[in-house]
Image (cartoon, rainbow, N blue to C red; front, side, top):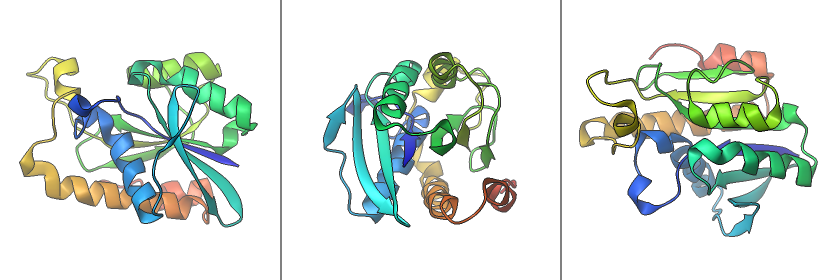
Length: 187
């Protein structure tokens, strides 16, 4: 069994914001499989699918992004999902918009949602897809990550989301090292 988590903040006011990259990517995966997020448990909305004979849970934590770790931990424990089968999809302020970094471990890089995950899982060793959102040093970080993605970046946003759907597909057929080799390059 696998747990794929899209990071984001619940609520209409946060839709299409940089901090909700994880939610947007998970929505695209769900759309491809004609799934909806109707099931609710432990402060998260989820959907399930069968992928190559494995049960996969797609999770959108409904606590604010900075509190996602508690929700994720409850899902791992309840469904008895090994940490090695956890994949987090989140935004990354330190990576240029459009670039994707796939990692199997590492620090939070200052991302409060990842800090909270590390706090609850008691490790930095979990797989993640980090989607670059760039950083506008002229803006307050909180205002920047909670800002809507501008119209000028919408075409590139759709490409990023499609790339993430492709990564999701390959995640179940490639080794994680081969997945990193295939997708970890600047665009």
